[in-house]
Length: 173
Length: 173
Image 1 (tube, one colour):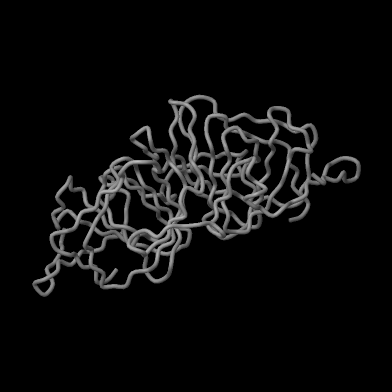
Image 2 (cartoon, rainbow over the protein chains, first blue to last red; image 1 turned 180 degrees about the vertical axis):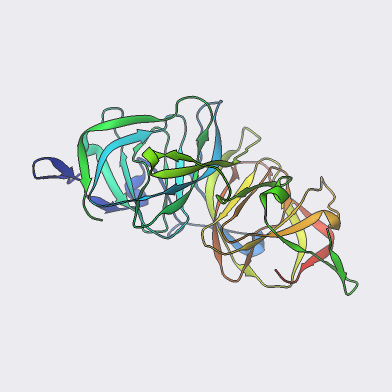
């Protein structure tokens, strides 16, 4: 993953531009750029259809639309924990045009540092995490940012958290 | 509904500001203003939870996240048809801060002119139509506008269309 040890203490996490072909193992990128569409409403609108399928895996939960408002982080930032939602997917779409960081791992349970990847959105992209995909909570840069969030609500424990063996640093984007 | 006959031909549809208390019979307003939230992500984010529940009423369909891009209408605009989706809810959240028009009716099947209402969003609000609620397709003013859309995808006929007995005019907002 080209993570480099810095000063013998913290691995540096390389930040990649977010691209659908790099993200397939984690979920989907929500974007219209380069995607096909159909004409609807008598030609007055384009539908970029089903950029992500909302998944709720149990019968006690159901999908809902929420809004998150996240405070910005400052760099360097140390990634110390990741979370996952075993019972459903989670989709984040920014309501302002500003890039944000997406940190994920395709590990099953234990999370090797080498499995952690960091992506920067282009300011218009959203992300959809498949159920059970390890990811960091919202990492917003610069200013507070609102997101539309589509995920499972309902009873039961739908959030696992894992602490990394050693923090991973993001020093610049 | 204070719709006024204009020139003996077309009823004028009064445009009201969109407010949750006026919209309960049709669905929900997606907004954070005046709504409660919880702190999440160790206090770094606010969650305005479940502003709308996504509903898919049949087993063949499932919810998905799409993006619509709508061309603007010009005023005066004549409302001639409404549509409804019997098998699922439909949520629209604008990705740019611009008001749009929301036209709905709580009629069952036949749509009396007096049942049709028009609302103008405040530029940040989204709307959620409950399954089966008559509504007009996207009515965007001024510039092209993108929306996140959460609705049912899948086989089967999930769109009824009704033609009004007489058009209803929206002359100004």
